[in-house]
Length: 154
Image (cartoon, rainbow, N blue to C red):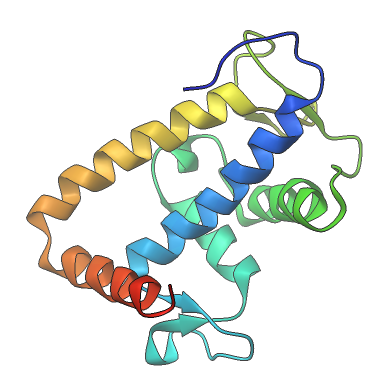
């Protein structure tokens, strides 16, 4: 659980972890594993993180209620996810908010992402995914593929 404190920079760390978690959830749903140079979906692998990310945010509820186009998803991927992961910063004046600041998880006009609201979306997705997992053999197979891979490389 996120703890609200003085909001003195912990949003970047939390958001970076959330961005990694989003990629993991996208790959988990497909049962795919990252490998540099892999073809899209060949041998249940991918190398184009951008494509995986964009598709996931635009097409998976509840993210798709906030990220309504490939252009928005691309903006988040480049200006927030990649900027945080590769350079420990956001780009193009994106801000990281927390707590009650702003009511949206992401606001593409005002250029902010609220780490707490984003966590709400992640929590909803995980709960919905868990329920779907109990009913979908295809999701179960994807889950097993992903975790067998993780186990074999641990």
